[in-house]
Length: 335
Ligand code: SAM
Ligand code: SF4
Image (cartoon, rainbow, N blue to C red; front, side, top):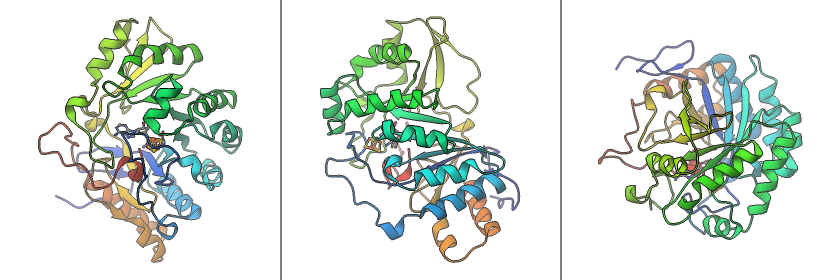
């Protein structure tokens, strides 16, 4: 394979350009969703391993001003647990050209933080919610925090962080009977619901293809209650979207396993300990933290980032029999 370009954006060998940066701010979380991590949590990264707020802001600046990144999403783990979040968002909002800024969160603490985040320049939030039933929520996340999430969603709208997106993972025999009810609930409140197929990214390696609720099954369940018409112009959005009952409400389905969208992928990922991953399912990482702490200048860091993206594979191949789950779970990579 030829070598990467030393100027310009984050292109790979298949001609895709990464303009959407996902930054994991921490691998820690205050929930324990069964599809994500075990009850006892994980071996969290130690503080010296984590990038500092300043280091994160520097890498975001390099991505936006030198590498063509236009959209920055903060995730984790649970990004609201990171105290520096407000300063990191403020610094990113001051960049030229100004990137679009969003946070993917479980919603706990959002009721308190939403106004401040809006004030410092956050544009949008994605909130994860898998059930309308508090008891079920407790069983799925091993924490009794359903009301906090619901309050967080409402506060996000009030603070002007809309359109608010809701992410839902359905599990067989657990919450797969709630697809239509969740959609009705979200439509009533003006939230954009997106279902995500469960991926083999749990720390416990418990994922089984047969247990996953597929995009096809989700659509069948929704069509029993609503009319769905395809919305055109998917672009690089991994969600296929449908107009519900003639619109304007929509619903999205992210079929990462059964309907992969790798050919349009525009993502680049930075882990909480400063590693670049060119794909959620990549088995290799590139260490920017060592470069940062070794005194590399901006140009050198930008070049390492380009090199890391150049080798991005054509597809993740989750549905292939030879698929190998990455070593790190979703909570450590940044979902
Ligand atoms: N803690 C935040 C949250 O839950 O929104 C941000 C990180 S979380 C890893 C990001 C998204 O990934 C959430 O919507 C979560 O439901 C989803 N997720 C976690 N594990 C998953 C899995 N194995 N398959 C599919 N989606 C998953
Ligand atoms: Fe935490 Fe998000 Fe994983 Fe749930 S999905 S355990 S909220 S990181």
